[in-house]
Image (tube, rainbow, N blue to C red; front, side, top):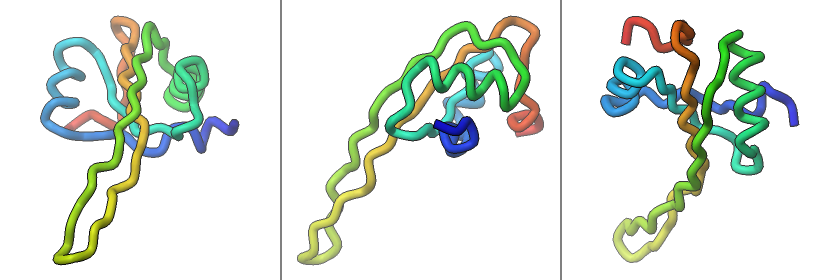
Length: 95
């Protein structure tokens, strides 16, 4: 799988910003077929940093209702990437 298709986007929320400051952890939405090793190599190659640990979790889409119509939000995969001390990703700076 191509490294540019593994990392979909960076999740920038209050919780992810706090994790970045305290524990040097970054949170990404990744492709559902990607595993921990592929996520780690993609982050290392894209951002030129050293990855210590990767945690992945599948987020199941919730059921939503609009009037009589039942729908469902899409399911996706989230990865929490821990970087080595001294490493940082510039995309999150200034948030």
